[in-house]
Image 1 (cartoon, helix red, strand yellow):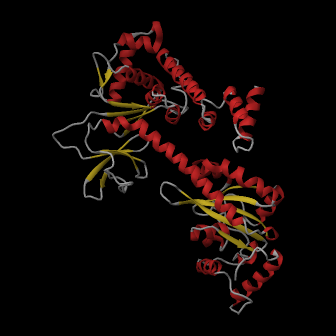
Image 2: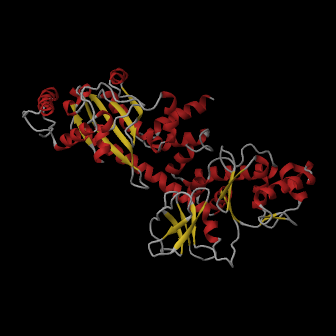
Length: 491
């Protein structure tokens, strides 16, 4: 039995009820259900779903939803989903629902009147809509078959949903291909439209494309920030690997697979297709893949510094993450900026100004050497004996090379924003001013919009003025930018 948009939705629902009652009663009905529906009914009944159940199970309490949402990958594309679907849902008396891969509703938006009706059937955040929880429905079935679906009226197995028509499509992780969740629009049965499934399918593809762009940015950031680890191998075989096993840079170039199988927890060994055994060393954003060291050889230590943004500064030394407080972070930045080394007197001046005390610095250096080792922090003069990569140096290199987009990708925010050390303040101002001018001078609206969403540009009125003046009238970014510009102007 096909579902034709030419059907009167109410009349078609009557037909579906006849089919439903006949099939569940074991009789011959007026028509056969669609194969998609009959197979879903079979799976649902095998999972002991009761057709007379009223609501799906609530599996996540309200108090836990904010953390689940913020940690879920689809949180990044919710602005896109809202701009694409919510206005349509409001006008057409539909509700937009977004689930995780298990079918648990995490987000819901739509017409206020309909949200109240949806609550009575459990179409609410925290409720699980998988087939084995509540039977055939667009969200659960799209996750089960990994394809866009539309479920109308009595095609739902549970009678409580017979007054609804729903369409859903899965969203996939562009990195692994795994299903991240489902996007659904649901409404009263008389609102059925053949374009519903095409709409959610196109929206899911838009979401995947945006996730793919974010993935490319993360890959480039991993490559830019961690190339010193790869070059520290001095021409020996090695590669930079994402947390999921994709290779983003390798030496020699072109001699690597697209992806390697990540080892089981507790192991650091990877076996390549050609039989070679390699070692994975953790980095700040991914891994360094290298050949096992021979007993008679040693390699210079590799040090990753992440000092930009609102979070706590961090360091990874030879794959080992070491937490940092502000003072050792300031020392590391100063030493990284002066590879030739610094005396205690000069370090005191850089960090404390003219009133700096070398004795204080010597005590802090002693504590830092205890943290990272005397083989990494050398004396006479004080210097770092390691291959050092840092986010602030990646930003500075990109700016000097005339690559503002690369600089913006490498930058998470201000350099050690809580630091008052003269050396830190000077570099912080240099990077912020340099990045702002580079972005403004680039003449690239997409880059300027990315800067406006960045911690360094969110409160920049001139940037928002230029974007609102230059963006096309129907650009989806305009409403948010106009609202933020109005707030900045009023402040």
